[in-house]
Image (cartoon, rainbow, N blue to C red; front, side, top):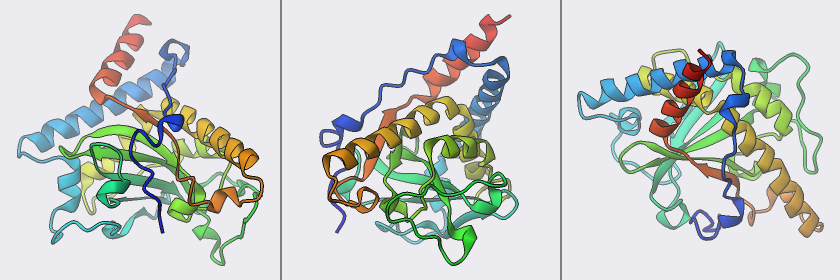
Length: 256
């Protein structure tokens, strides 16, 4: 049974105040983030013309929206980049405050740098199919209006992933790209752009994930921390796309 741990009060110890210093980023990274921000904003503009949003776009054509089901069924998988994602929702008492559902993002081994291996942590078992040793990157929580309001990371058992170190996960952020048209070209482009727009902040969250897991293991040495149902969300941070896009653009503009 999955515990009801998603409400904000229960998770306050995992709330991260993002401290990314935009001025410390390279001009190249800022340019990548600005382009990603423009992509996100443009997708919002185009969808809004018909009263749509990225969540509604992804759920279009499905009869109902059911807790735990993956949308689309079978997930979205780019066979060139080996990036993968799906959208789903937990029962209402297991969601963040104001959450409708969330996206989970992954990269599979065929999309990883040569030589990258899973972390040799307790409970590690290599899948029979090596390409099933996928790494979770970050989850994106969406509100009822279909807009993102939070980024978060999770423990291994939550998605059935294979654990990779924070350093390796951060390397994989550059590899996530869903470049085909189905089931929705706007959603594929939007999610790809979101991971580029928030790349520095996701790095902070993934580092915090590893700290949270290490601290939990130290407090509960008798447990397998990666399979402990009492540890689900390992870090989270609130986001505002509008504010972030503006801040990144201004930082780049200040470079002259």
